[in-house]
Image 1 (cartoon, rainbow, N blue to C red):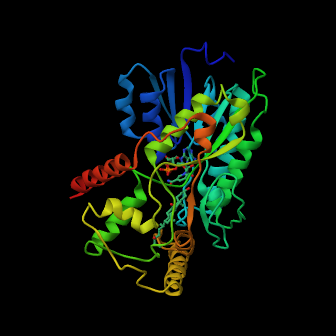
Image 2 (image 1 turned 135 degrees about the horizontal axis):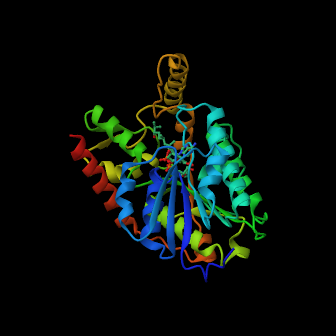
Image 3 (image 1 turned 120 degrees about the vertical axis):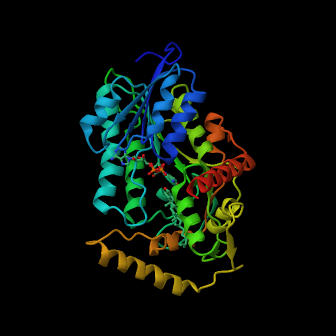
Length: 369
Ligand SMILES: NC(=O)c1ccc[n+]([C@@H]2O[C@H](COP(=O)([O-])OP(=O)(O)OC[C@H]3O[C@@H](n4cnc5c(N)ncnc54)[C@H](O)[C@@H]3O)[C@@H](O)[C@H]2O)c1
Ligand SMILES: CC(C)[C@@H](O)CC[C@@H](C)[C@H]1CC[C@H]2[C@@H]3[C@H](O)C=C4C[C@@H](O)CC[C@]4(C)[C@H]3CC[C@]12C
């Protein structure tokens, strides 16, 4: 494999490139990776916005494909220098079966790894998640922890289980020989709750507030901190890691990095109000309006209703036992490992991140009206 220093033009593959995070990674690469010759965007569902990217000097190749199909992944991978693997089934609402979540998130990741080995792609950046760590099934808080903080990472839910297994596969693959004889260099990035332009859950919560007359009712104590990170900074960390992996393979290979920026530590609901407030919503209550046991009862009833209705329709509300427990458990990170290892600094300040997200929400709102 030619050394990156000599290779003037590189081929990147982004799986899940049409998703919430993936789109920002694609756009960030086009803006901030000067060595790009070709950018391949691999996704089950291609977005029409891809067409607007094909006017620049970089060859943008849209590939409709399924990461669960090894041959499709290998075909997309052939000739790529770097793969950024963001494709995944992000489901904590019971929309997909545990088997499907495993097939996409675990088998799909295994297919990406094997494709790297078969075709000679030497650098793999995997989008993992905070949930690989926690919150765990015991509801233990993770308060401003880092990559080395001891924590009992025990999961039962299919989504965190799949992310933990996939991350383990990626880290264990570091150092495997790829076609051509060079070693595979891998690393995993662990975003906390990502927010920003394109965040569908934020939209769903906004619409829920509109249905309730412009009000949201506090369900989580304000003291429960939940880590959040702006999507533009997560995308930037992916681009930077992909660039630095070759020069710092010995240090970064096989490593995990939390994605972080200067977004404030707040409860999930209070943080969302930073964006929903300027869009006209109000959070009612300085403390939860219902006791936790009653909220959990409602969450269990939602899960029962989902199970009963499944043969007829998909009922997947935001509130279920897992999301309630997650929202109700402190999980925040405080680390500088990415800065120490590859010089990461957030590209967007908190103020810029907040403004961009508000403008997006308001623009979507005006379109919806
Ligand atoms: N959203 C968050 O808060 C968050 C936080 C931490 C980590 N992550 C991780 O970031 C990654 C992207 O998450 P997101 O929020 O952008 O989700 P998303 O659902 O918006 O994007 C996922 C993309 O993957 C694609 N995809 C799904 N199944 C596929 C398959 N079988 N083959 C090919 N493409 C497939 C989807 O079409 C979609 O475009 C995921 O791996 C997720 O676990 C997300
Ligand atoms: C109904 C209330 C209890 C309401 O407050 C529920 C909020 C709930 C939908 C979210 C609370 C925490 C969110 C998760 C967190 O931000 C991190 C995640 C990891 C990432 O890999 C995928 C998304 C998510 C699981 C995210 C999903 C929504 C929440 C559970």
